[in-house]
Picture 1 (cartoon, helix red, strand yellow):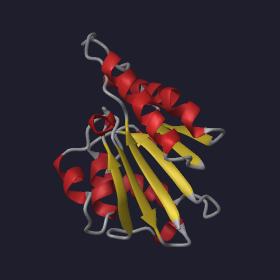
Picture 2 (picture 1 turned 30 degrees about the vertical axis):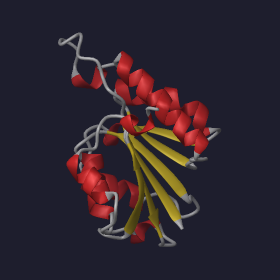
Picture 3 (picture 1 turned 45 degrees about the vertical axis):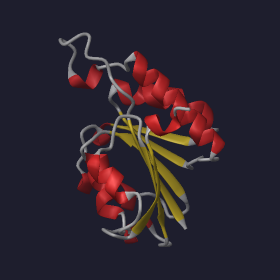
Picture 4 (picture 1 turned 90 degrees about the vertical axis):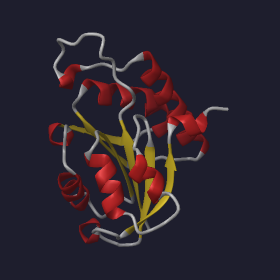
Length: 169
């Protein structure tokens, strides 16, 4: 069983409208949401073996805030993930070495949301993903294949979908 974790970057700041999109930092709310997701990951023992991260500043800052929950993992920051389509993300997952049993992609919408919808078989969490994949949301999918190259549409179960608002007590 292979696991896929799709984490959208936390809320970014629009204070400086002159900044290029790639260089926007996290907003205060985003920093808090990323820490909440990190606590959830720690509580659920979510420790992907490989983390693939977009080069955008807000994504790297999201990674910084969840890294304590990840433990010592292989992290790759890849320019191709910035603004990647669902198809491009699927191709990247298919290229993951088969020795890796769990991978996390930290990136952007609409690619992450569409990828989750494309991969997921019908199930209880699909409707929530379809409505909105908000910032700092985490989709967790399980894939029965032995090889990442076998991953295809409808080939995974959407095991859970966690949004920051779900973690407020």
